[in-house]
Each structure stands twice: as C-alpha cells, then as structure tokens.
Image (cartoon, rainbow, N blue to C red; front, side):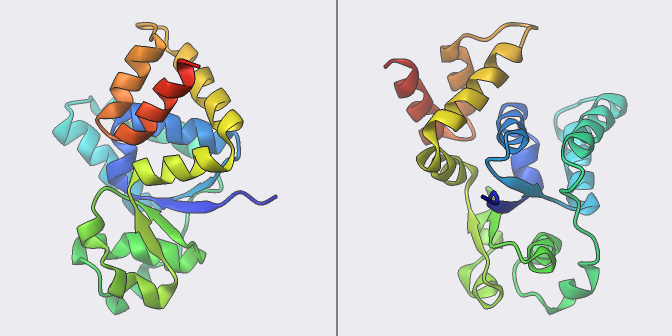
Length: 185
C-alpha cells in the first residue's frame, strides 16, 4: 500500500519533538513527507533566528532530514505561486502541494490556507495534531512502535514516556494525550 503524502510546512518542522515524531513515522513509511528547499530554508532560519541554534547545528538538522527523506524534495513549483490565492507568504507551500498533486498540507497556520484557496486544487490543510491522530487511527500499533522507538533513542537526557508525551503536548496535545493513554494500558 502506498503511504499517504503530506506537505510539511516549516512551522511543523521547527519544534524538535514534533519534527522527530514526524520523521520517525515517515521512516516507517506511515506517510510520505514532502517539502521544498524554500520550506527547509524557512526551517533553518527559524532554528537560528528564533530558537538560537547555531548555523552549523541548524544546517546539520536540515541535512539529516534531506538524507532521511531524499524523495521528499519537490521542485518546479515556482511558476504556480502567482496564481494561488492563499496568504502570500505561504503560497509557495500550496504550490508544492499542487505541483506534487498532494492532498494534504500539515501546518499550524490554518488561517494562511483558507478552504476557498485550497479547494480548487483538491488540497486541505490540517494541524499536526489532527494529522498525527489520523495516522494513529489508521495503524495504532505501527505509530506506537515508531513513537516508542524515537522516545528510547533519546539519550541526552533519556526521556520517560511521561516526559516524551509532555514535550509533544505543546504542539500535538490530543495526540500526546492518546499516547499517554496507550502507555497506561
């Protein structure tokens, strides 16, 4: 079965816990992430300008994402940008989705992607929390295994299940709560 595809907006790739979970789920082929160099550039700028990461650390993180998901890069979308009607600063994200014929954009900036701008292109925008819950509903065991593998990979410092869920709560509160409920079973 072909995994579902989703364009990941920069805002869901900046928070490390959320990005780590998304990348782990992508590594397990639970979905196929898509992005552009423009999106990755926004991630890198946010990591350095807003979160204070060094240029080297931010660059390393972006390079690891590229290496982990070499098929994620979408090109040739630039000519589509002028014809799009969502928020100007995020037209490049919709253009990536249109170019890739991808039905979903995962973003926290839903206001920048109004339905009337997306509908003509067969695209919807969803929050990361909703997207992760959809994946969990599709294959709970596989999502749990991937998330648990990511959690135990943290060594500096190690994370308990509670700590891991707490970190996810800021960006995916309902998903984190479901994971915690699963851990308590």
